[in-house]
Image (cartoon, rainbow, N blue to C red; front, side, top):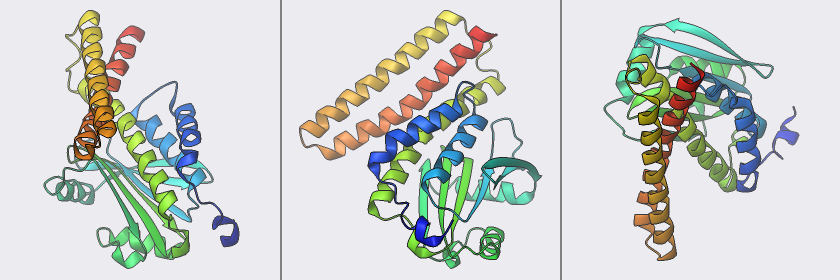
Length: 256
C-alpha cells in the first residue's frame, strides 16, 4: 500500500462502532484471551496503516519466564513460545512502577523506544521510522504488549485518530480483563467449588455494581462534576471486566 493511500486512512471516533462490531465477530463465539488478542490485533490493523507489527502475550497459564511472541504475516497472526529471561525482566520492570492497566505511547522516532533495543532494531530493519506502543496489564501484571511500526512520522494518528485508538483500546481492555480473570481463576482452582446458583448470584451482583457506577458517572456528567464522573466511569469499566469474567465462568460451567 502506498504512503499516499495510507495517509488517507485517518480513523476517528465515528468509526468506533464499526471497529467494535468487527472485534466482536472475530472474538466470538469462543471468548478467550487468545481469541480476544487475535481479534484486537486483526481489527486494529484494519484501521491503522502499519508497516510492521511486534507483539508479546503473557497468558494466565504461561510460566513467569515464558511469553508468546506474536507475528503478523499477511493478515494471519502467528505465535511462537519464547523462554527467555527478557520476558521476566519486562514483567519485573512494569510491576512496581505503574498501576495503569493501559499505557499507549506514540513514538515519533524509534530512538524513543528505549525499553526494547531488539524491537527497535527489528522495526528499523523493516523500514519503520515511527511506532505506536501499547501495553495492557492487570494490576501491573503484564498481559499484552503490541508495537505498531509505521513507515513515517506523518502516519502517526492525529487528534481524532488518537481518540479512536484510545477508546477502542479501553473497550478492548474490559474484554481482555474479563477473559483473563476467567482463565486465571480457572487455572488457580477458584471456580471449582462454586455451585451454579452461587455463580449466577455473584454475576448479578457485579452487574448491578457496574450499573450503579454508570449511573453515578452519568449524574456527575449532568451536574458538571467531571472528576466524580471520571472516577465512577473508571470503576464501572473495572467492574465490567469482572462481570464479564463471571459470565464466561457461567458459560464454561454450563458447557461442562
